[in-house]
Each structure stands twice: as structure tokens, then as C-alpha cells.
Amino acid sequence: MSERRFAILAVCTANICRSPMMELLLRDRLGEARFELASAGVQGRTGHAMDAMSEMELMRLGQSAGTFRSQPVTEHLVHSADLVLTATRAHRARVLEEEPRALRWSFTLLEFAALSESVTEDLTAPDLVKAVAARRQDFRGDPDVADPHRRSPKVHRETADQILAAVETIADRLSRCS
Image (cartoon, rainbow, N blue to C red):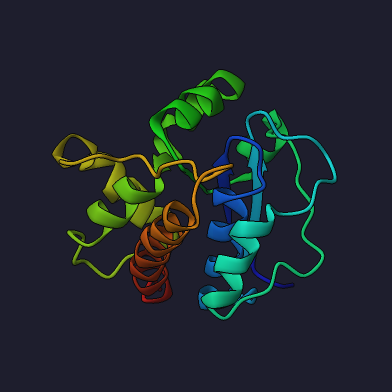
């Protein structure tokens, strides 16, 4: 019998810019043997392609949107996730409307990246999430990733670079989990 994969859900507004980038970059860095990746939007609609400028940034980072299609956040997706990574605090609040208990496993991307670096113990992925949750009050800084939708190429690039840096930190930490 195969071991259950650790499920990560990335969330943003429409699931066409930030969360697909988070999902696809995490999938590339973590692989799918131990991790299951998905993304959704708090105002997402089913079946939309990734935003063209965000897709160009993703290609700049060496990835392809492939057959990606958007989907809305659902209670099932949130409840099925072991870790929910949102682009902003407002997205996390919307996730918690779907599943209030998800506070224990929901963080902004930047918050989880920063706090996971402070966890030095060798832990399983679920225990890492618990350890980061216990440190939540220690987070300092702006936890939100700006929405690049319908904004300049410069904003898209800055957003992509910010997401990439956080994803690399998170992927490095999760890949070291036992």
C-alpha cells in the first residue's frame, strides 16, 4: 500500500496569477512522489487559463503552465489539504470561512516561508506545519504577495520573483522532512 502524499493547496483571488505560479513552482521543486499540489481561487471560476503575463513570468522561471485550468476554493479542497498557502491574509480569511479549523494549517506564502526557516528540528511535513503554526506570532513583515493582474510587466516580475524566493525556501524545508 502506498503512503498518502502531503497535500498542499495554493490560494489567491481568481486562480490565474499567483496561486498557479505557487502550485507549479512547488510541484517542480518538490515532485509528486511525496507531495500533491493544487491551487484554487477565492473568486475562481472553473476552467480559465493562466493570465498571459503571469504565464510569461512562469516561462522566464523555466516552467510552463501546460494544461493548467483555474478552479474555485471549496470546502473539500481546504479540508483535504495538509497545508494551505495563500497569497494574502484576506485569502486566508476566505479559506477560514470555508473551513474554520484550517487555521492550524493555513498561512500566507511569505509567512510560512519565513517561519519555516526558524524550525531546525528534523520533522515530518505535518509536524513542520504544527511547528510553524506555533511560531505564527513571531512573524514580522508584510505577509501579502501583491496581485499583478492587469498591472505592469514590472509588477508581474516582482511578484514572480517574490513567489519564487518563498517557494524555494518552502520546498527546501519540506524536502528535508522525514
